[in-house]
Length: 133
Image (cartoon, rainbow, N blue to C red; front, side):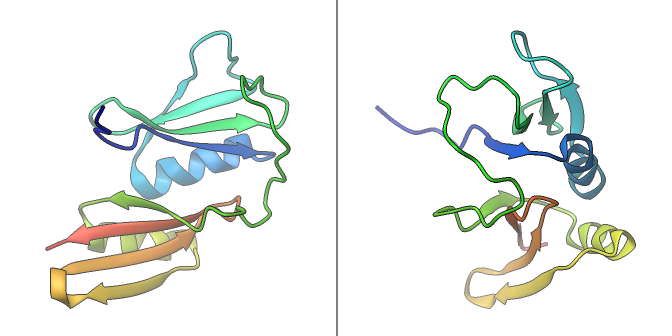
């Protein structure tokens, strides 16, 4: 058994369109309908440039195989943040400024890593990592 990579992050929200727009504007992800039995009214997936659905966004009333109580917009329980490896630091920072978004920068000079931390519309904290960028 071997874990190859993180497959996706699932966000339950009462702001489906706003959340999809945020990930599209900030990260350039492409919004597509989730596969059946999910519907476009209750679920959308955000795809990266390699056509991987890395962010799944579901409405509160979306069917979930493993259902549990979720409170949109609250802090995310034991999950502190989601880290994404990115390129284009200056472009992403410019997008955040244009969006009027809250963010914090950090430098880990020992490994040549610049970071941007920003919450999405649901208070999911993103850690955007830019190695040697």
